[in-house]
Image 1 (cartoon, rainbow, N blue to C red):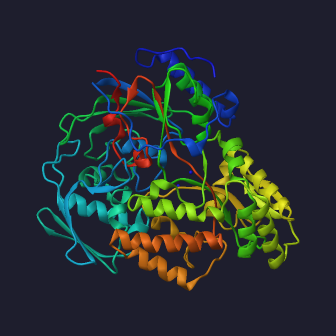
Image 2 (image 1 turned 180 degrees about the vertical axis):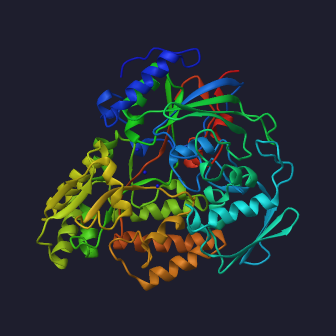
Image 3 (image 1 turned 90 degrees about the vertical axis):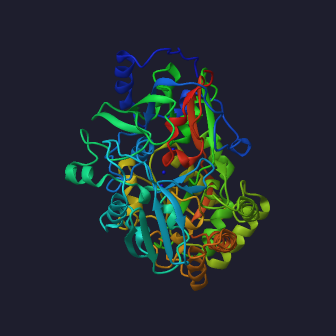
Length: 552
């Protein structure tokens, strides 16, 4: 959970000279991509679609950009977005997240729940790993236990698991301490990857590094990784499902202006732009299509317990006074939509109309643009709470988006009679605010961004529990805690949605976090290509397998 001149066109595979130029310009990290041009957007008018039109025919190779080189291709030890963008085409999961953000059993061919604390998975037959060996129930159980290891990234997904056992030749039975509505959604994420036990064990600590096998069963296999240069995957000829349309994908990495230039000149075919500013700088560029899809990502202000925003009335006042529309236009080229909840609409993997209606109702607490009425109410709240005497310190880095949000937050505080002070740290240091309480000891609020891996709002609202490590402001509400736990155990979607809407209202009303905007997924693509999903599912769905020419 994190963001023109007409180009020359390339018709052949990426040439060595172009690759050299791309890597040379990658050192331009930190450039203001909005300054490169692009047509401003109105995020409220963007049509968010889960898919792109189907491709026709095959493609020998596509050259794809990542914002960073993966630290590792072992997602149990390094769960980076760059690694997921690659491995989602290589490694398969027990469940699969669909482009519309729903899930379905996948390597688990069947799933049943004989009672509300038991999940029985039937392992799909006829699946082979990329070394040709058969995928077995033993591999599934070993993988689940590896994910659950306390030292692994996905360990928290297994906190409610009582036992996991092989109960048949192709059957795994999982028993829970209490009903768990989100566990199957976790199995559509990294907690559901099935590894080849023998290959992972043989690689030892080197697994996931250049030169090691991928140990997976997906439509592509890892065929090369030159550290600092490129990474390649190729269609696995003995794949159990449909063969991919694109036979080979070559990944390189660049950031900011280097990525924009590579796409404009045709040195690369596409990217999922993590930064809205990258997509904004490419709007209107010749030969490039952009597709926007639902995402769980959001921009937020995360208050701390330091003091300035400890009173919920001050937090609500700030939420009423901030100019969300101005942030979207000035900081993100219009590709961020003012939003009243701290999780994007991609989380609505079920009961979409109910969640959409609830979102609209909360707009009064988080208006897109402050009005005379909202400012008057904000000032009343400040007066009732008693204005802090010290400036409210806003933590940010120097990136364009966060700088705009920090300045907008300071301006909002000034509108309601409060003082704001911005503390800017280097981008490399900024991440410490999330993980280290000591790093945020001197700030009152963080300019943050967040996303969740599950298409369920309840995958977010546990951040407001009294004992959550992400509840920095110290919000405590026994009713809230009880409703969250009840929702997490509600296996019926309709009932869980009812509870989630109640929990959401309480979270936003208390301004545990202050929502600013939702950030859609932005797929930037050579206009001769089509097919991959436009939603956040690209992190967990084999998007490259659907990528191909618009015309056969």
